[in-house]
Length: 136
Image 1: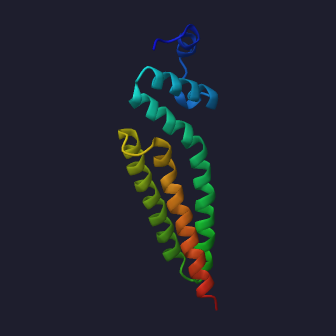
Image 2 (image 1 turned 120 degrees about the vertical axis):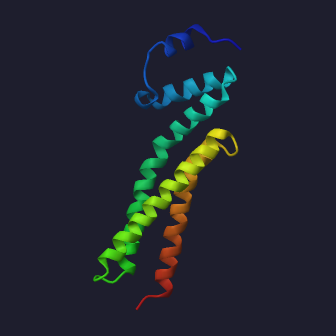
Image 3 (image 1 turned 60 degrees about the vertical axis):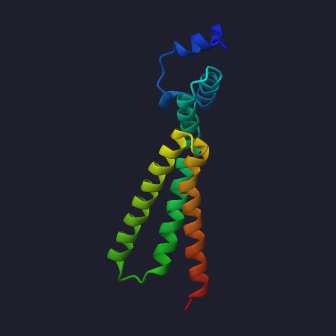
């Protein structure tokens, strides 16, 4: 399928993907998919879902940090700091791995973006259930 005149005008805007609105990214992603450029289509689908997944990750980090502060005694600040660094590093590693797997087409790019958040929600649930069973 060929590009329409509107698509050519859209592509001529010269915007970077980071500066595009959601509707523009979605339109460009559909255009790439129609033209069978699946690599770019997957990248754009990932960018689209990152716009929602990254703010959710901040909320999840806030919940994990709050629950971690409730678990650890007040005198173990260094342990809490180290645990927080380990959680953030783990999130980053899972995020990079899932992003690469999504871009390769092994899993959906949207799923690749959301898996680290799902793992974060899982850790919040595990920590909160641990707190329920070990209350003083």
